[in-house]
Amino acid sequence: MKFTKLFRVLTLSAIVSLLLLAIPASPALAYDYEITLDPEEGEIGDTIDIDGTDWPKTTVIDATTTYSYVDIYFSSEEAGEGDTIGTAAADDVNIFQRVKTGAIVGTNGNFSTTFKVPSELKTGNPDEDVHGGAYYVYVTLGDSKVIRAVAEFTVIAGQIALDPTQGVVGTEVEITGEYFGAREDITVTYDDEDITDTIEGDNRTASGGGFTCTILIPESTTGAHTIAVEDESDHTAEAAFTVEPEIAIDATEGKKGDEVTVTGTGFGDEVTEDITLDGTVVGSGDTDEYGSFTASFEVPDVEEGSYEITVGDADAVEFTVLIAISVSISPVTTQASPGHVGTDIVISGVGFEPLHEIRITYASTPVVFTTTSDADGAFAYTFKAPESQAGQHTITASDGINTLTTTFVMESTPPPIPELILPEADVKAIQPVYFDWEDVTDDSLPVTYTLQVAIDDDFTSASIVVEQEDLTDSEYTLTEAEKLEPREKETPYYWRVKAIDSASNESAWSAPGSFYISVGFGFALPNWQIHLWWGLGAAAAVAFGYWLGRRKAVSAY
Picture (cartoon, rainbow, N blue to C red):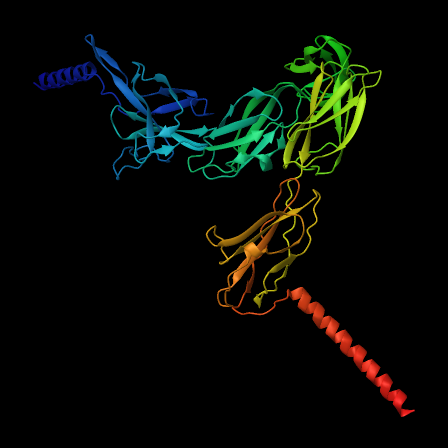
């Protein structure tokens, strides 16, 4: 019985042990949730590899697949594992961009996928632009908001674009920048030389980290040059600008023997460049360290026509060779340095028909002068600039076969404003009224005057009672036909004068003077005659006193 009971106990123990062996152990539900990024820094738009290990596996049971997947987020807000990401106020991370949805975890618990560094974070709330600096990559399981893994990522800030990307020295280039630090000063360099002081436009980033400014390409050699922009956070972006060679000439036409100056930029560093006229070398220039040069050549003895001047790889410029006939004028006048009526003009020419009459025409008047060329076809003739309006005037020289023109610029400075003398202000004038004013001098003589008398100081057309033009003297006496009606001191007459020179330049009107004429009879003398009689009377009184004194002295003896 005892053995039987013991046998049963042993049998039961064996059965329980077998059952325990038959029941599989329950799987552990703890995961490491590891992720790695490659690379761990990059620019906006870069593609980043992300690998995960030890995540819940995708399972296949009886041909049925149960997928495990993850979502990947990019955020500027720092959080830890176990925190939540979402748009609710209670979530730990609200500013983010979902950069990958539903990345499948393999049956081994690993996943591997990619995402692009975004330029904006706008899946969450509020939206935010991506700048340079530290950001965070979060991974959640499926649609869960719980963060299971965190990796830090550094955004390399700053991107610039140039428009255009190539051109000649002096080209205006627009620089557009993005993804720099917000509201930070920028420094612009050209081949490591600071040119910030020369930029136009933004010199500081906006709240979104962007800016737009323009620069002028400085003197530099041909080829690629580096334009760089750096913000206060040491974020730097670079772009290349390709300098192309260019030439310019100081004259677009000339004749044999004329000197033409060629300037070049954007060539090689300290090299010699040949100057060619339709393929024929006519000169050369040595560039400096910036690829620039200035050189001259004489126009060769070639036929009249259009030619191309070239230097190296620069675009050609057109130059016209003229026939060996020319006309020149002295003095050379410009708007800034004009001549005047009466200026001695010397016009000379070469290459005209020998021993031939030369007709010289001052076209705008017109005035024609004639002279004769010498045996070599040269001539020179001097005449005075005639009366003509201010501005440019064409002078033509012709032998009947050849005709050339030059220009003379007449001055446009108005003469001084005349100073009024008589009648004096607010005095009673005597008929016939005599007007007198200071003489006016001017480069373009002679000067004429215009006199106006009116019954109001506005000198409206209805109020003007006397108007005399082209007066050659600085005085005028009204005629009998111009006799003025009496007007009292309270309602006087007003008068004014302006000067006009021989180049038709007019001064401003003088400040108006005033006078009045009372009702009365009797013989009236002009003011000047009254002053004369007063002077004569005073002289007579002095003479009489002297005579009387002498007489008394004689009587005393």
